[in-house]
Length: 103
Image (cartoon, rainbow, N blue to C red):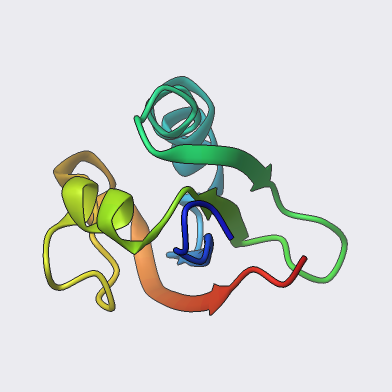
C-alpha cells in the first residue's frame, strides 16, 4: 500500500491467431514491452512469451502504483483489455484480471 492506496496487479493475456505467433512476438518485443516499461505509474512489468504447451499465448504481469495510475493510462474502463490497433489482426482472444497487491 502506498499513501493509503493499494497497488494493483494487472494480468493481461493474449492468445494469437494460428500462424501469427512470430508477427505478434515481434510486436510484443519491439512495441508492447518498451511501451509498458516506460509508462508512468507502473512499478514493475513482467512480460511472458510462449512456453511448451502455450505456443500461442503471451502475457504481461504489471504492478501499478495505484488504481488512479492505471486509469490515467487506460481510462475509466480499466476492466476491459485495451489493444493497440497494430495487434488487432494478430490476436484471437484477450483476458485481463486485476488484484490488490498483498504485502
